[in-house]
Length: 552
Image (tube, rainbow, N blue to C red; front, side):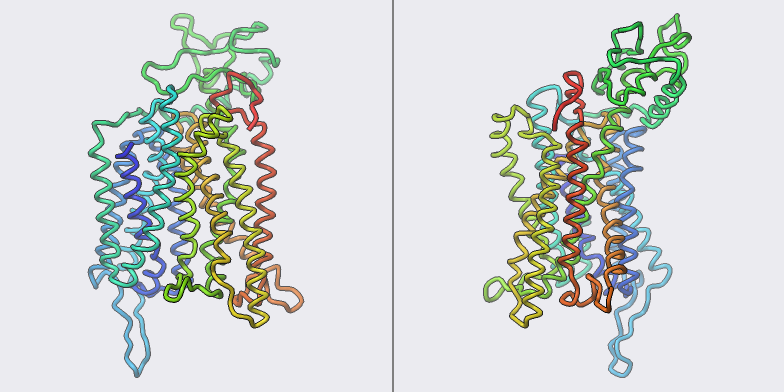
Protein backbone atom coordinates (compact mmCIF):
# COMPACT_ATOMS: atom_id res chain seq x y z
CA UNK A 1 0.00 0.00 0.00
CA UNK A 2 2.76 2.59 0.71
CA UNK A 3 3.92 2.41 -2.93
CA UNK A 4 0.40 2.93 -4.28
CA UNK A 5 -0.39 5.72 -1.82
CA UNK A 6 3.02 7.31 -2.38
CA UNK A 7 2.60 7.34 -6.16
CA UNK A 8 -0.88 8.85 -5.85
CA UNK A 9 0.39 11.48 -3.38
CA UNK A 10 3.22 12.56 -5.66
CA UNK A 11 0.88 12.56 -8.68
CA UNK A 12 -1.65 14.75 -6.87
CA UNK A 13 1.06 17.08 -5.58
CA UNK A 14 2.55 17.46 -9.04
CA UNK A 15 -0.72 17.95 -10.94
CA UNK A 16 -2.27 20.21 -8.28
CA UNK A 17 0.91 22.24 -8.00
CA UNK A 18 1.01 22.65 -11.75
CA UNK A 19 -2.64 23.61 -12.20
CA UNK A 20 -3.43 25.53 -8.98
CA UNK A 21 -2.10 28.76 -10.45
CA UNK A 22 -2.56 27.95 -14.12
CA UNK A 23 -5.14 30.65 -14.76
CA UNK A 24 -2.57 33.23 -13.68
CA UNK A 25 -0.08 31.58 -16.05
CA UNK A 26 -2.51 31.93 -18.96
CA UNK A 27 -3.16 35.59 -18.13
CA UNK A 28 0.41 36.73 -17.46
CA UNK A 29 2.56 34.47 -19.64
CA UNK A 30 0.23 33.59 -22.52
CA UNK A 31 -1.54 36.98 -22.42
CA UNK A 32 -5.02 35.49 -22.78
CA UNK A 33 -7.96 37.65 -21.76
CA UNK A 34 -10.06 36.68 -18.73
CA UNK A 35 -12.85 35.06 -20.76
CA UNK A 36 -10.50 33.03 -22.96
CA UNK A 37 -8.49 31.85 -19.98
CA UNK A 38 -11.65 30.91 -18.09
CA UNK A 39 -13.08 29.01 -21.07
CA UNK A 40 -9.82 27.15 -21.61
CA UNK A 41 -9.66 26.12 -17.96
CA UNK A 42 -13.32 25.03 -17.98
CA UNK A 43 -12.80 22.90 -21.10
CA UNK A 44 -9.66 21.32 -19.66
CA UNK A 45 -11.38 20.71 -16.32
CA UNK A 46 -14.34 19.07 -18.06
CA UNK A 47 -12.08 16.76 -20.06
CA UNK A 48 -10.15 15.84 -16.94
CA UNK A 49 -13.33 15.10 -14.98
CA UNK A 50 -14.97 12.95 -17.65
CA UNK A 51 -11.82 11.21 -18.97
CA UNK A 52 -11.77 8.83 -15.97
CA UNK A 53 -14.93 7.16 -17.30
CA UNK A 54 -13.06 6.08 -20.45
CA UNK A 55 -9.93 5.18 -18.51
CA UNK A 56 -11.96 3.09 -16.08
CA UNK A 57 -13.70 1.21 -18.88
CA UNK A 58 -10.38 0.38 -20.57
CA UNK A 59 -8.91 -0.73 -17.25
CA UNK A 60 -11.77 -2.98 -16.16
CA UNK A 61 -12.42 -4.49 -19.57
CA UNK A 62 -9.02 -4.87 -21.21
CA UNK A 63 -5.65 -3.93 -19.67
CA UNK A 64 -6.13 -3.99 -15.88
CA UNK A 65 -5.54 -1.34 -13.23
CA UNK A 66 -1.75 -1.59 -12.98
CA UNK A 67 -1.02 -1.04 -16.65
CA UNK A 68 -3.65 1.67 -16.93
CA UNK A 69 -1.92 3.57 -14.10
CA UNK A 70 1.50 2.89 -15.65
CA UNK A 71 0.57 4.14 -19.15
CA UNK A 72 -1.31 7.12 -17.76
CA UNK A 73 1.60 8.09 -15.51
CA UNK A 74 3.82 8.25 -18.58
CA UNK A 75 1.27 10.47 -20.34
CA UNK A 76 1.04 12.64 -17.22
CA UNK A 77 4.77 13.27 -16.94
CA UNK A 78 5.06 13.89 -20.69
CA UNK A 79 2.37 16.56 -20.38
CA UNK A 80 4.15 18.14 -17.43
CA UNK A 81 7.47 18.06 -19.27
CA UNK A 82 5.77 19.73 -22.22
CA UNK A 83 4.49 22.59 -20.05
CA UNK A 84 7.84 22.95 -18.29
CA UNK A 85 9.62 23.15 -21.65
CA UNK A 86 7.06 25.68 -22.91
CA UNK A 87 7.75 28.04 -20.02
CA UNK A 88 11.52 27.44 -20.26
CA UNK A 89 12.02 28.18 -23.97
CA UNK A 90 11.16 31.77 -25.00
CA UNK A 91 10.00 30.90 -28.53
CA UNK A 92 7.35 28.48 -27.20
CA UNK A 93 5.39 31.20 -25.38
CA UNK A 94 4.62 34.87 -26.15
CA UNK A 95 7.33 37.40 -25.39
CA UNK A 96 6.87 39.61 -22.30
CA UNK A 97 4.63 42.64 -22.62
CA UNK A 98 6.22 45.86 -23.87
CA UNK A 99 6.13 48.72 -21.36
CA UNK A 100 7.39 51.56 -23.54
CA UNK A 101 6.10 54.89 -22.11
CA UNK A 102 5.12 56.20 -25.52
CA UNK A 103 2.73 53.39 -26.38
CA UNK A 104 1.86 51.99 -22.98
CA UNK A 105 1.74 48.30 -22.23
CA UNK A 106 1.43 46.10 -25.30
CA UNK A 107 1.18 42.32 -25.12
CA UNK A 108 1.55 39.95 -28.05
CA UNK A 109 -1.07 37.26 -28.43
CA UNK A 110 0.15 33.65 -28.62
CA UNK A 111 0.69 32.16 -32.07
CA UNK A 112 -1.14 29.08 -33.32
CA UNK A 113 1.92 26.92 -32.81
CA UNK A 114 2.34 28.20 -29.25
CA UNK A 115 -1.31 27.42 -28.49
CA UNK A 116 -0.85 24.03 -30.18
CA UNK A 117 1.99 23.07 -27.85
CA UNK A 118 -0.12 24.21 -24.90
CA UNK A 119 -3.08 22.09 -26.04
CA UNK A 120 -0.84 19.03 -26.45
CA UNK A 121 0.48 19.45 -22.93
CA UNK A 122 -2.99 19.84 -21.44
CA UNK A 123 -4.29 16.92 -23.50
CA UNK A 124 -1.57 14.64 -22.15
CA UNK A 125 -2.45 15.75 -18.63
CA UNK A 126 -6.10 14.84 -19.23
CA UNK A 127 -5.05 11.41 -20.50
CA UNK A 128 -2.94 10.95 -17.39
CA UNK A 129 -5.77 11.97 -15.10
CA UNK A 130 -8.19 9.73 -17.00
CA UNK A 131 -6.17 6.65 -16.14
CA UNK A 132 -4.67 7.43 -12.75
CA UNK A 133 -7.74 8.91 -11.07
CA UNK A 134 -10.18 5.99 -11.43
CA UNK A 135 -7.66 3.18 -10.91
CA UNK A 136 -5.46 4.25 -7.98
CA UNK A 137 -8.00 3.56 -5.23
CA UNK A 138 -9.29 0.24 -6.67
CA UNK A 139 -5.69 -0.89 -7.21
CA UNK A 140 -4.93 -0.01 -3.59
CA UNK A 141 -8.01 -1.94 -2.44
CA UNK A 142 -6.82 -4.97 -4.44
CA UNK A 143 -3.81 -5.17 -2.11
CA UNK A 144 -6.06 -6.11 0.83
CA UNK A 145 -7.81 -9.40 1.52
CA UNK A 146 -11.42 -8.32 2.01
CA UNK A 147 -12.35 -11.81 3.24
CA UNK A 148 -10.52 -11.22 6.55
CA UNK A 149 -11.38 -8.82 9.36
CA UNK A 150 -7.87 -7.36 9.24
CA UNK A 151 -8.17 -6.77 5.51
CA UNK A 152 -11.53 -5.02 5.86
CA UNK A 153 -10.16 -2.75 8.59
CA UNK A 154 -7.17 -2.01 6.37
CA UNK A 155 -9.48 -0.98 3.53
CA UNK A 156 -11.39 1.38 5.83
CA UNK A 157 -8.13 2.98 6.94
CA UNK A 158 -6.85 3.17 3.36
CA UNK A 159 -9.81 5.28 2.23
CA UNK A 160 -9.37 7.71 5.12
CA UNK A 161 -5.61 8.11 4.68
CA UNK A 162 -5.98 8.43 0.92
CA UNK A 163 -8.19 11.48 1.34
CA UNK A 164 -5.99 12.87 4.12
CA UNK A 165 -2.89 12.71 1.93
CA UNK A 166 -4.85 14.25 -0.93
CA UNK A 167 -5.89 17.15 1.29
CA UNK A 168 -2.38 17.69 2.63
CA UNK A 169 -1.10 17.74 -0.94
CA UNK A 170 -3.61 20.44 -1.89
CA UNK A 171 -2.50 22.59 1.05
CA UNK A 172 1.13 22.36 -0.09
CA UNK A 173 0.22 22.99 -3.73
CA UNK A 174 -1.90 26.04 -2.93
CA UNK A 175 0.73 27.60 -0.69
CA UNK A 176 4.36 26.62 -1.32
CA UNK A 177 4.15 25.79 -5.04
CA UNK A 178 1.97 28.81 -5.85
CA UNK A 179 4.39 31.04 -3.93
CA UNK A 180 7.32 29.74 -6.02
CA UNK A 181 5.40 30.34 -9.25
CA UNK A 182 4.40 33.87 -8.27
CA UNK A 183 7.52 35.05 -6.45
CA UNK A 184 10.45 33.02 -7.84
CA UNK A 185 9.91 31.75 -11.40
CA UNK A 186 7.48 29.80 -13.52
CA UNK A 187 10.27 27.48 -14.67
CA UNK A 188 10.99 26.37 -11.10
CA UNK A 189 7.28 26.40 -10.24
CA UNK A 190 6.58 23.93 -13.08
CA UNK A 191 9.85 22.02 -12.77
CA UNK A 192 9.35 21.02 -9.13
CA UNK A 193 5.94 19.34 -9.73
CA UNK A 194 7.42 17.55 -12.77
CA UNK A 195 10.30 16.22 -10.67
CA UNK A 196 7.84 15.08 -8.00
CA UNK A 197 5.80 13.24 -10.61
CA UNK A 198 8.95 11.44 -11.75
CA UNK A 199 9.60 10.39 -8.14
CA UNK A 200 6.04 9.08 -7.89
CA UNK A 201 6.44 6.97 -11.04
CA UNK A 202 9.73 5.52 -9.78
CA UNK A 203 8.11 4.66 -6.44
CA UNK A 204 5.17 3.02 -8.20
CA UNK A 205 7.37 0.73 -10.30
CA UNK A 206 9.62 -0.16 -7.35
CA UNK A 207 6.63 -1.83 -5.72
CA UNK A 208 5.91 -4.10 -8.72
CA UNK A 209 7.16 -7.34 -7.08
CA UNK A 210 4.88 -6.76 -4.08
CA UNK A 211 1.60 -5.94 -5.82
CA UNK A 212 -1.47 -8.13 -6.10
CA UNK A 213 -2.61 -8.08 -9.73
CA UNK A 214 -6.24 -8.63 -10.68
CA UNK A 215 -6.86 -9.58 -14.30
CA UNK A 216 -9.60 -7.76 -16.24
CA UNK A 217 -12.64 -9.95 -16.87
CA UNK A 218 -14.04 -8.30 -19.97
CA UNK A 219 -16.54 -5.54 -20.50
CA UNK A 220 -19.39 -5.40 -17.99
CA UNK A 221 -21.43 -3.42 -20.53
CA UNK A 222 -21.90 -6.49 -22.73
CA UNK A 223 -23.19 -8.34 -19.64
CA UNK A 224 -25.62 -5.50 -18.95
CA UNK A 225 -26.95 -5.72 -22.50
CA UNK A 226 -27.29 -9.50 -22.32
CA UNK A 227 -29.19 -9.39 -19.03
CA UNK A 228 -31.59 -6.81 -20.44
CA UNK A 229 -32.19 -8.71 -23.67
CA UNK A 230 -32.61 -12.08 -21.94
CA UNK A 231 -35.07 -10.68 -19.38
CA UNK A 232 -37.08 -8.96 -22.14
CA UNK A 233 -37.29 -12.14 -24.23
CA UNK A 234 -38.75 -14.07 -21.28
CA UNK A 235 -41.04 -11.32 -20.04
CA UNK A 236 -44.20 -13.32 -20.86
CA UNK A 237 -42.82 -16.86 -20.71
CA UNK A 238 -41.69 -17.06 -17.08
CA UNK A 239 -44.12 -16.07 -14.30
CA UNK A 240 -42.25 -15.35 -11.04
CA UNK A 241 -43.46 -15.09 -7.48
CA UNK A 242 -41.76 -13.49 -4.50
CA UNK A 243 -40.87 -16.94 -3.12
CA UNK A 244 -38.92 -18.11 -6.17
CA UNK A 245 -35.21 -18.57 -5.54
CA UNK A 246 -32.18 -20.33 -6.99
CA UNK A 247 -33.02 -23.60 -5.28
CA UNK A 248 -35.84 -24.36 -7.67
CA UNK A 249 -38.95 -23.40 -5.72
CA UNK A 250 -42.20 -23.62 -7.70
CA UNK A 251 -40.38 -25.50 -10.43
CA UNK A 252 -38.24 -22.49 -11.35
CA UNK A 253 -34.61 -23.36 -12.12
CA UNK A 254 -31.94 -20.67 -12.27
CA UNK A 255 -28.63 -20.83 -14.09
CA UNK A 256 -25.94 -20.58 -11.39
CA UNK A 257 -22.58 -21.95 -12.60
CA UNK A 258 -19.49 -21.68 -10.36
CA UNK A 259 -17.14 -18.75 -10.78
CA UNK A 260 -14.09 -19.17 -12.97
CA UNK A 261 -11.00 -20.51 -11.15
CA UNK A 262 -8.88 -17.69 -9.72
CA UNK A 263 -11.67 -15.13 -10.01
CA UNK A 264 -11.68 -12.43 -7.31
CA UNK A 265 -15.33 -11.57 -7.93
CA UNK A 266 -17.63 -12.06 -4.94
CA UNK A 267 -20.27 -14.74 -5.42
CA UNK A 268 -23.65 -13.03 -5.29
CA UNK A 269 -26.89 -14.79 -4.28
CA UNK A 270 -30.25 -14.19 -5.92
CA UNK A 271 -32.25 -11.24 -4.59
CA UNK A 272 -35.76 -9.93 -5.19
CA UNK A 273 -34.64 -6.35 -5.85
CA UNK A 274 -35.45 -5.47 -9.49
CA UNK A 275 -37.11 -8.89 -9.68
CA UNK A 276 -38.10 -8.42 -13.33
CA UNK A 277 -34.43 -9.03 -14.22
CA UNK A 278 -34.50 -12.46 -12.55
CA UNK A 279 -36.12 -13.89 -15.66
CA UNK A 280 -32.80 -13.48 -17.47
CA UNK A 281 -31.36 -16.34 -15.35
CA UNK A 282 -34.38 -18.68 -15.51
CA UNK A 283 -33.62 -21.85 -17.46
CA UNK A 284 -36.14 -22.68 -20.20
CA UNK A 285 -36.18 -25.33 -22.91
CA UNK A 286 -33.12 -25.18 -25.13
CA UNK A 287 -31.15 -22.80 -22.91
CA UNK A 288 -28.67 -25.43 -21.65
CA UNK A 289 -26.44 -27.68 -23.75
CA UNK A 290 -27.15 -31.21 -22.52
CA UNK A 291 -23.60 -32.36 -23.32
CA UNK A 292 -21.60 -29.83 -21.28
CA UNK A 293 -24.24 -28.10 -19.15
CA UNK A 294 -23.33 -24.69 -20.51
CA UNK A 295 -25.54 -21.91 -21.81
CA UNK A 296 -26.34 -22.22 -25.52
CA UNK A 297 -27.09 -18.55 -26.13
CA UNK A 298 -25.81 -15.80 -23.76
CA UNK A 299 -28.47 -13.46 -25.14
CA UNK A 300 -31.23 -15.79 -23.91
CA UNK A 301 -29.77 -16.98 -20.60
CA UNK A 302 -27.40 -15.30 -18.16
CA UNK A 303 -26.06 -16.49 -14.84
CA UNK A 304 -27.31 -15.30 -11.47
CA UNK A 305 -23.89 -13.68 -11.01
CA UNK A 306 -24.18 -11.59 -14.19
CA UNK A 307 -27.73 -10.57 -13.36
CA UNK A 308 -26.90 -9.57 -9.76
CA UNK A 309 -23.91 -7.52 -10.94
CA UNK A 310 -26.29 -5.51 -13.11
CA UNK A 311 -28.54 -5.05 -10.07
CA UNK A 312 -25.56 -3.71 -8.08
CA UNK A 313 -25.13 -0.98 -10.68
CA UNK A 314 -28.84 -0.16 -10.77
CA UNK A 315 -28.92 0.13 -6.96
CA UNK A 316 -25.97 2.53 -6.83
CA UNK A 317 -27.16 4.89 -9.57
CA UNK A 318 -29.94 6.55 -7.46
CA UNK A 319 -27.39 7.20 -4.68
CA UNK A 320 -24.84 8.82 -6.99
CA UNK A 321 -26.53 12.24 -7.59
CA UNK A 322 -26.37 13.02 -3.86
CA UNK A 323 -22.82 14.33 -4.14
CA UNK A 324 -23.55 16.79 -6.95
CA UNK A 325 -25.22 19.49 -4.83
CA UNK A 326 -22.58 18.99 -2.14
CA UNK A 327 -19.83 19.57 -4.72
CA UNK A 328 -21.69 22.66 -5.95
CA UNK A 329 -21.69 24.05 -2.40
CA UNK A 330 -17.99 23.31 -1.94
CA UNK A 331 -17.13 25.08 -5.19
CA UNK A 332 -18.47 28.37 -3.83
CA UNK A 333 -15.36 28.57 -1.65
CA UNK A 334 -13.26 29.33 -4.71
CA UNK A 335 -15.58 32.02 -6.07
CA UNK A 336 -17.95 34.05 -3.92
CA UNK A 337 -16.21 33.22 -0.65
CA UNK A 338 -13.07 34.75 -2.14
CA UNK A 339 -15.07 37.83 -3.11
CA UNK A 340 -16.30 38.09 0.47
CA UNK A 341 -12.74 37.80 1.76
CA UNK A 342 -11.62 40.68 -0.48
CA UNK A 343 -14.07 42.96 1.34
CA UNK A 344 -13.10 41.88 4.86
CA UNK A 345 -10.23 42.61 7.22
CA UNK A 346 -7.78 39.85 6.29
CA UNK A 347 -5.19 40.61 8.96
CA UNK A 348 -4.28 38.01 11.56
CA UNK A 349 -2.19 39.87 14.08
CA UNK A 350 -0.15 42.93 13.17
CA UNK A 351 2.01 41.61 10.36
CA UNK A 352 0.24 38.73 8.60
CA UNK A 353 -2.50 39.12 6.00
CA UNK A 354 -4.30 36.11 4.55
CA UNK A 355 -4.41 36.14 0.72
CA UNK A 356 -8.06 36.10 -0.31
CA UNK A 357 -7.44 33.32 -2.82
CA UNK A 358 -6.01 31.05 -0.13
CA UNK A 359 -8.93 31.34 2.29
CA UNK A 360 -10.36 27.90 1.42
CA UNK A 361 -7.15 26.33 2.76
CA UNK A 362 -9.03 26.55 6.09
CA UNK A 363 -11.37 23.82 4.82
CA UNK A 364 -8.45 21.67 3.74
CA UNK A 365 -6.77 22.04 7.12
CA UNK A 366 -9.99 21.01 8.86
CA UNK A 367 -10.10 17.86 6.70
CA UNK A 368 -6.45 17.06 7.34
CA UNK A 369 -6.97 17.40 11.10
CA UNK A 370 -10.35 15.68 11.29
CA UNK A 371 -9.73 12.49 9.29
CA UNK A 372 -6.89 11.10 11.48
CA UNK A 373 -8.98 11.79 14.60
CA UNK A 374 -11.98 10.08 13.03
CA UNK A 375 -9.90 7.12 11.82
CA UNK A 376 -7.93 6.51 15.03
CA UNK A 377 -10.33 7.63 17.75
CA UNK A 378 -13.96 7.76 16.65
CA UNK A 379 -14.09 4.66 14.43
CA UNK A 380 -12.77 2.29 17.16
CA UNK A 381 -15.22 3.82 19.64
CA UNK A 382 -18.19 3.63 17.28
CA UNK A 383 -17.20 0.13 16.17
CA UNK A 384 -17.62 -1.09 19.75
CA UNK A 385 -20.99 0.64 20.08
CA UNK A 386 -22.52 -0.29 16.72
CA UNK A 387 -20.70 -3.46 15.70
CA UNK A 388 -20.11 -1.93 12.26
CA UNK A 389 -16.54 -2.22 10.94
CA UNK A 390 -16.57 1.39 9.78
CA UNK A 391 -18.15 2.70 12.97
CA UNK A 392 -21.25 3.82 11.10
CA UNK A 393 -22.43 2.83 7.65
CA UNK A 394 -21.18 4.47 4.48
CA UNK A 395 -24.61 5.87 3.67
CA UNK A 396 -24.95 7.33 7.15
CA UNK A 397 -21.64 9.15 6.65
CA UNK A 398 -22.76 10.48 3.28
CA UNK A 399 -26.01 11.70 4.84
CA UNK A 400 -24.12 13.49 7.62
CA UNK A 401 -21.91 15.17 5.02
CA UNK A 402 -24.89 16.33 2.96
CA UNK A 403 -26.52 17.79 6.05
CA UNK A 404 -23.30 19.59 7.04
CA UNK A 405 -22.93 21.10 3.55
CA UNK A 406 -26.40 22.65 3.83
CA UNK A 407 -25.62 23.92 7.33
CA UNK A 408 -22.39 25.45 6.01
CA UNK A 409 -24.33 27.33 3.31
CA UNK A 410 -26.83 28.64 5.88
CA UNK A 411 -23.95 29.87 8.05
CA UNK A 412 -22.38 31.41 4.93
CA UNK A 413 -25.60 33.29 4.23
CA UNK A 414 -25.85 34.73 7.75
CA UNK A 415 -22.18 35.76 7.75
CA UNK A 416 -22.64 37.50 4.40
CA UNK A 417 -25.73 39.29 5.73
CA UNK A 418 -23.67 40.66 8.62
CA UNK A 419 -20.71 41.56 6.38
CA UNK A 420 -22.94 43.38 3.89
CA UNK A 421 -24.86 45.27 6.60
CA UNK A 422 -21.60 46.44 8.18
CA UNK A 423 -20.22 47.57 4.82
CA UNK A 424 -23.40 49.48 3.88
CA UNK A 425 -23.52 51.22 7.26
CA UNK A 426 -19.99 52.52 6.73
CA UNK A 427 -18.45 50.59 9.60
CA UNK A 428 -14.99 49.01 9.47
CA UNK A 429 -14.76 45.68 7.59
CA UNK A 430 -15.44 42.67 9.77
CA UNK A 431 -12.62 40.19 10.34
CA UNK A 432 -12.01 37.34 7.91
CA UNK A 433 -12.20 35.04 10.93
CA UNK A 434 -15.99 35.24 10.51
CA UNK A 435 -15.56 32.99 7.46
CA UNK A 436 -13.75 30.27 9.41
CA UNK A 437 -16.85 28.50 10.85
CA UNK A 438 -18.48 27.98 7.45
CA UNK A 439 -15.19 26.82 5.94
CA UNK A 440 -14.56 24.36 8.77
CA UNK A 441 -18.08 22.94 8.54
CA UNK A 442 -17.73 22.65 4.76
CA UNK A 443 -14.44 20.81 5.22
CA UNK A 444 -16.15 18.33 7.52
CA UNK A 445 -18.96 17.96 4.98
CA UNK A 446 -16.45 17.15 2.26
CA UNK A 447 -14.66 14.64 4.50
CA UNK A 448 -17.86 12.81 5.43
CA UNK A 449 -19.45 12.87 1.97
CA UNK A 450 -16.66 12.11 -0.44
CA UNK A 451 -14.54 9.71 1.61
CA UNK A 452 -17.68 7.65 2.24
CA UNK A 453 -18.77 8.00 -1.39
CA UNK A 454 -15.42 6.74 -2.68
CA UNK A 455 -15.57 3.80 -0.27
CA UNK A 456 -19.21 3.14 -1.19
CA UNK A 457 -18.47 2.91 -4.92
CA UNK A 458 -15.49 0.63 -4.38
CA UNK A 459 -17.42 -1.73 -2.10
CA UNK A 460 -20.81 -1.81 -3.81
CA UNK A 461 -19.89 -1.88 -7.49
CA UNK A 462 -19.04 -5.28 -8.99
CA UNK A 463 -15.33 -6.04 -8.56
CA UNK A 464 -14.85 -6.10 -12.33
CA UNK A 465 -16.26 -2.56 -12.55
CA UNK A 466 -14.57 -0.90 -9.57
CA UNK A 467 -12.62 1.58 -11.70
CA UNK A 468 -15.81 2.75 -13.41
CA UNK A 469 -17.45 3.13 -10.01
CA UNK A 470 -14.49 5.12 -8.74
CA UNK A 471 -14.63 7.44 -11.76
CA UNK A 472 -18.13 8.55 -10.71
CA UNK A 473 -16.55 10.84 -8.10
CA UNK A 474 -14.77 12.79 -10.84
CA UNK A 475 -17.97 12.92 -12.87
CA UNK A 476 -19.77 14.26 -9.78
CA UNK A 477 -17.35 17.20 -9.62
CA UNK A 478 -17.64 17.77 -13.37
CA UNK A 479 -21.43 17.93 -13.26
CA UNK A 480 -21.24 20.07 -10.11
CA UNK A 481 -19.08 22.57 -11.99
CA UNK A 482 -21.53 22.73 -14.89
CA UNK A 483 -24.48 23.07 -12.50
CA UNK A 484 -22.73 25.85 -10.61
CA UNK A 485 -22.19 27.76 -13.84
CA UNK A 486 -25.82 27.26 -14.88
CA UNK A 487 -27.11 28.38 -11.47
CA UNK A 488 -24.95 31.51 -11.49
CA UNK A 489 -26.22 32.46 -14.96
CA UNK A 490 -29.83 31.74 -13.97
CA UNK A 491 -29.63 33.84 -10.80
CA UNK A 492 -27.82 36.60 -12.68
CA UNK A 493 -30.56 36.81 -15.32
CA UNK A 494 -33.65 36.43 -13.15
CA UNK A 495 -32.96 38.46 -9.99
CA UNK A 496 -32.46 41.90 -11.53
CA UNK A 497 -36.02 43.22 -11.11
CA UNK A 498 -37.51 46.62 -10.37
CA UNK A 499 -34.34 48.46 -11.30
CA UNK A 500 -32.40 46.71 -8.56
CA UNK A 501 -29.10 44.95 -9.32
CA UNK A 502 -29.09 41.18 -9.48
CA UNK A 503 -27.94 39.13 -6.49
CA UNK A 504 -24.56 38.41 -8.05
CA UNK A 505 -23.75 41.85 -9.42
CA UNK A 506 -20.14 43.01 -9.75
CA UNK A 507 -20.45 45.10 -6.58
CA UNK A 508 -20.87 42.47 -3.88
CA UNK A 509 -22.21 45.07 -1.43
CA UNK A 510 -25.02 45.98 -3.84
CA UNK A 511 -25.88 42.33 -4.53
CA UNK A 512 -27.38 39.65 -2.30
CA UNK A 513 -24.91 36.81 -2.23
CA UNK A 514 -26.50 35.74 1.05
CA UNK A 515 -29.74 34.94 -0.80
CA UNK A 516 -27.74 32.91 -3.32
CA UNK A 517 -26.21 30.92 -0.46
CA UNK A 518 -29.66 30.25 0.99
CA UNK A 519 -30.83 28.93 -2.40
CA UNK A 520 -27.94 26.46 -2.45
CA UNK A 521 -28.75 25.47 1.14
CA UNK A 522 -32.35 24.79 0.08
CA UNK A 523 -31.17 22.68 -2.87
CA UNK A 524 -28.95 20.80 -0.45
CA UNK A 525 -31.91 20.16 1.83
CA UNK A 526 -33.95 18.78 -1.06
CA UNK A 527 -31.01 16.60 -2.08
CA UNK A 528 -30.71 15.32 1.50
CA UNK A 529 -34.41 14.37 1.65
CA UNK A 530 -34.09 12.50 -1.66
CA UNK A 531 -30.95 10.76 -0.43
CA UNK A 532 -32.51 9.64 2.86
CA UNK A 533 -35.53 8.25 1.01
CA UNK A 534 -33.31 6.20 -1.33
CA UNK A 535 -30.74 5.22 1.30
CA UNK A 536 -33.28 3.82 3.76
CA UNK A 537 -34.29 1.30 1.10
CA UNK A 538 -30.78 0.43 0.01
CA UNK A 539 -29.51 -3.14 0.49
CA UNK A 540 -25.74 -3.43 0.87
CA UNK A 541 -24.10 -5.98 -1.39
CA UNK A 542 -22.32 -7.67 1.52
CA UNK A 543 -25.62 -8.11 3.43
CA UNK A 544 -27.91 -9.07 0.60
CA UNK A 545 -27.94 -12.76 1.55
CA UNK A 546 -29.02 -11.89 5.11
CA UNK A 547 -31.96 -9.60 4.55
CA UNK A 548 -33.60 -7.65 1.80
CA UNK A 549 -34.47 -4.58 3.79
CA UNK A 550 -31.33 -3.39 5.50
CA UNK A 551 -31.51 0.06 6.94
CA UNK A 552 -28.96 2.81 6.46
